[in-house]
Length: 258
Image (cartoon, rainbow, N blue to C red; front, side, top):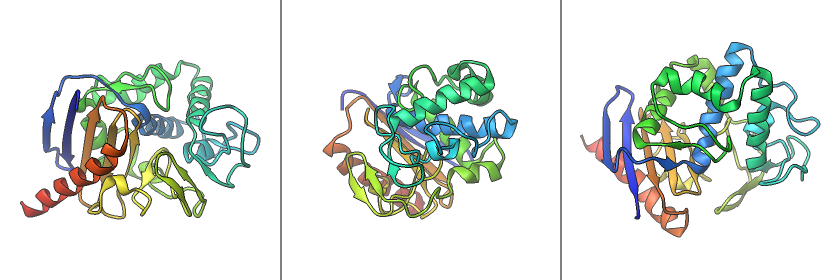
């Protein structure tokens, strides 16, 4: 691995970390949960409503966060009607970033800094594409993971929206993994259904998270009260499909044995 760092954080704040802790990594699609959390803060503040119109005709903020707006992976022309299919979409998160900027009357990165970066006292850089362009250290991501275990910037009831299946039963394609029916998704996070093999086999059914094409992942298990983060600069590939589940299972087995 050219550069890597990994760690866990538990609900009581215990941190275990390994690797280059001060290195800044491209998060790739692990940016999406950050954007989703910012939208939940905005919803609590009344800046946006999850069910207000955004994106293609008939689509809402909720559709965009759940990859159900009909927008393709890349490109602004819809390939499905809102709510008809789970179409994983980077474009949808660009639309979300622009929508939040308009509603908040401030640039998207500035809102993320005020809503998440400053309250959590982290160095995460929200510049770039809202769905794939952020950068952070392992410490930054572990702090974010702790927030997703024990929320402080939003109410627990609001965070529960993030981990609730949105538009249940939609079939779709998970990039690099193939077609699933159904492909259940929360708001900006994948849920630990049988489709989420990258999380391993030991996480509870309540686990959720995201992986990124830069060789990155974050998963959170509220039932086990632990979150795991791995950051690398090796592009996602078959190595990740093999290594990530093994790492995740080993982490949970070690915690169980203590």
